[in-house]
Length: 281
Image (cartoon, rainbow, N blue to C red):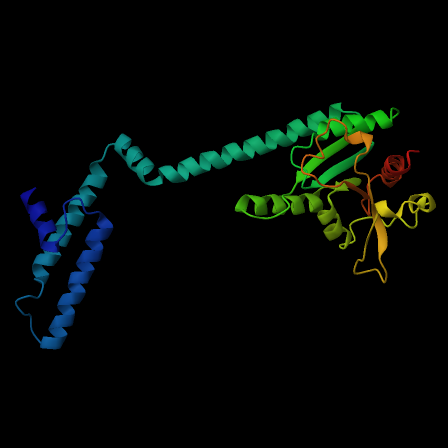
């Protein structure tokens, strides 16, 4: 072991140096010796002793090779785990996440299979933190007793983006718009204005009951999309409607604008809800 210790000293390395360090140091000393020899034509006193360097390197590498051959199987497993434990841990976590996601999909499908057919869906979209979407769903079903199921979801977005979390909520909201095809929207003023300009909502001035709707112009909300030559009505202010009783929708002080998605999956029922909540019929 004294010879091995001397070999490490020759290379200028500690005894616990790993193989990569040994090889890097060895090639550095070789390069240094050759460079000085080319410049000066002969070895100087401070030039590395190539013979000693080669011998030290050979001795250390030989010792490492012998250890690799004689390490018990259990030691090899421990060595493998030492260097690859984070790969294994990450792999296990990834597997758990995949299994959980698949189970979630299966569970949701099973849950959907046990529910009655969907009559209409609605999304409360905007600065409506704390809104009870389930209570709103119950209130809507009370208006349409012949229906069996109305799904209401909440996509809450802060009025001002002040943090990374706020930005994440906004990005999630945009993803929801692209992936979920809801029939109706209940929005705050600012989000209605933004989304209406993107042609997300159905224009109201072509509806059979438009003549009755436009009698109360103060509640009508208009927008100019890139496909319009003039502003059209796309929403109606239903702030204070009885369907919001017990839902806490007014907690953030926002007004509630109802609009029908341009390509609503169930347009007829969505328009029935719009008519009932705006005209009471």
